[in-house]
Image (cartoon, rainbow, N blue to C red; front, side, top):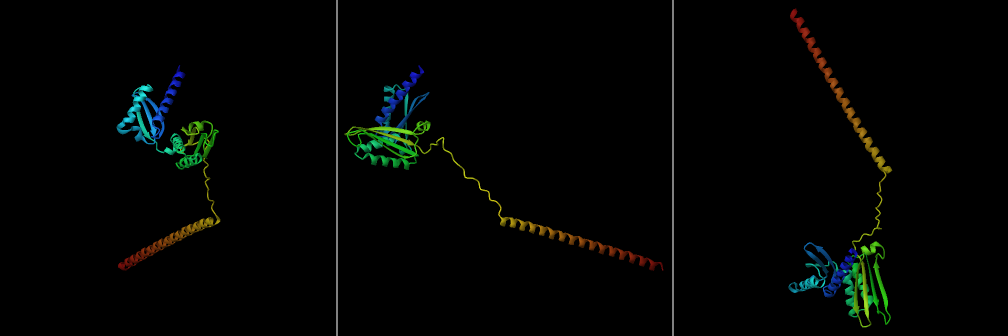
Length: 263
């Protein structure tokens, strides 16, 4: 059945994850991803210190590859190691750091607040740290610490919020550390941005007066141009009159010369 195949594949990936977490705890194991390709099965390992995952001369990564092939029946497994860019935003790494600090004897409140400050300083929108077990005395108790904004239910809480878990063995008993982080790049579906209204300036009385003054100045310039044109037309008329007088004098002179020649 198809459902059974999904369950078997899910169990195998969970066992691979637990094996890698146990083997690479000192390397800052931050999770893994399995990708099936035509060339084989690609296992991508995310770690804070990838050099420790690879080992001297690739010894550690070759041993892990052989183990994945023999113990988990992966076909032609290939291990790729990637460094975690911001370890403070990886909940699994931070949960193991909290467990390590608790094992060194630090107080759980100090550990929780210090870790939350580091996570929020890295740009997270919200963080929740839960420490449960015998933290105060003989009775089991749970201490929860939150900072920022983090989704608690619905699809955004399962899709966008990252989770990490770690355990630590102390003298009173076992403590469980649960870390939830909402990364900075998450955009929630109910986020609405309101744009500022566009303000249009209405013309004031002073600006209206300036416009009227400019219009009056343009009318005055047009009037001066018109007067100049009229003066030019009068000058042309005067020149025409002078030409007529000169032609009349020449005609009269010619008539006088003709009469004298006849006599």
